[in-house]
Each structure stands twice: as structure tokens, then as C-alpha cells.
Amino acid sequence: MSTFTILHKLRLKKSSTKEKIIQFYDEATEDYEFWSKDFNMHFGYYIPFKTNLFKRDSMLNEMNQQIFNRLNVPKQNSLVADLGCGIGGAMRYGLRKYPLLNIIGVTLSRFQVKEGNKRLKKMNGLILEENYNNTSFKTNSVNGAYAIESFCHSGHNKETLKETYRILKPNSRLVIADAFLKRDEEELCLGSTYCYEQLCKGWSLEGLGSIQNVKNDLEQIGFRNIKIEDVSFRVAPSVLHVPFAITGFIIKKLFKKESLKPQSWKNLKGSLFALLSGLHLNSFGYYLITAEK
Image (cartoon, rainbow, N blue to C red; front, side, top):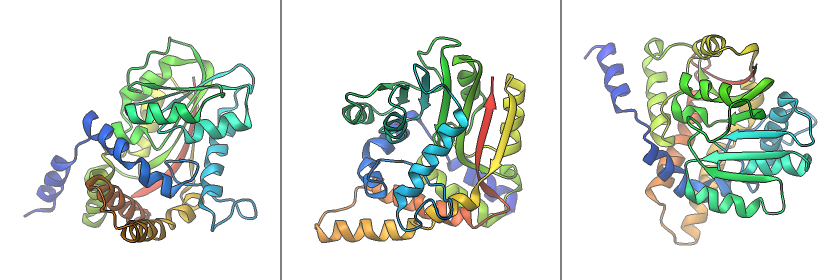
């Protein structure tokens, strides 16, 4: 069987339906609580002498701070959109630090809406059950928007970026923190392709966009002052927590004599292949993208 045929078969297997994404997040929240006491459903950002290598939430919350730094919105009476907010971990961080900010998050998961809004009581935050590809935000209505490891569920689709551009006010910013391909899928080696396939299946991802293609899409849509930062080595220390977190989670379940749900196995598998993908430095990278309308 030719390499091209193998790649084609792997790509055909990859899918990320709305139902799979909802199921993934409805059932994986317990897993993420083990990953982060603050319910940060993402990797972290390491700064020597500031964040603690051995305290995961120290790095995860620093990623939140890096996002808000780049948004550069007035910290009073501004409206910010969290596109793919999960259970609201980044929202809570932002609202604790900037209590006069207003943040509205969107997620497909009804469970996350319910549980996330409980945690946002008495804060200027609200989570809606909406698709970030088609939100209820009015055109030119938000002062800033961010997406932390969420746009990958739509494959960093151009339509997703268009919707974000629509809701942003002129001169406001979009900040994306996510993993991207450094080359097109067709150019990945077999090892990278296998890791990529397993990552997408485990985490119900449509796929990762090529960083150059995403930049081109942003430009074509009308975004300007686009800044792309490869922060892979800043993110790597938190990624290295993955095997320890997986081991700890399984031991905890065994100790309590609880069985692992099928989605938990998929999530753990996705986490492992996120680590393995990170070793393919020529194929994958973690980037912070800032773009202005």
C-alpha cells in the first residue's frame, strides 16, 4: 500500500461532529478537573522564575494572563468573547483579575453551560450554549475575542475566523492560543500522521490548520497587524505533565475501584498523543496569534 493511500485512509477516519464534541466535553470535565483545579482546559505558559514548573496551574493561569495581555482591552466596561470557553476557567481568571470586565463565553456543551455559570455567580460573566461559528453577538459588538485550544475543533476553519471578524469592533483584537501544523497534512511523515490521527480521534478534533494557511485566511478576511508567535518551548513544560497526570488519574480511579468511562480513555489517549506530537518539532508547533480588525 502506497504512502499516499495510507494517508488518505487515515484522513477519511478523522471526524469531529457536533455530537462528538458535545459528548467529549460533557464526559471529560472530571478529567480536566484532575488536570487543573481551576478548570483550565488547556496547556500552560512557562516563564523562568515566575511560574512554577511543578505546579501545573501556575503555568496554565499564566497562559490566561498572556491572552489578556495581548487582547489589550480597557479593563472597565469592555465586552470580551471567549469562543469555546469550556467550563469557564479562563473567564474566571480574567474576571478575578479584572472584575470590571464583562466576558461572555460560548460552548456547545449544555453541561458546561450549567456548571460553568454556577462558578461565575456574582461575576460579570455568562456562558451561552452556542456554536462559535454562528453566534448571537451583534456585528461590531465586542471589544476583544479569544480562543484557547478551541478553534481546532473546527479545524481552524476560515468560516470560524470570519464569524469572529464579524462580531469584533473595529481596531479590536482576536487572540488564538493553539497547536498548528507547520506544513500541510499531505506533507507529514508517517509518524507525524499517525500521531495526528490519534490526537484528532482522542480529542474529537476536526484537525489542525497549517499556520501559514491560517495566516493567509486572516489576511484575506481583513485582519491586520497579524502577529504569530511560536511559543512551543514555553508550552512544553506543561505538556510534559501529561504522563504524570494520566498515571495519577488512573491510580486514583483504581484506588476508588471506579471504572474509566470510554470518553476518559479517549481523552487520556488524546493527551498522550498531544505529547508525542510535540516531539515532531518539524511538523507541529504551538502558537499565539494576535490579529486586529
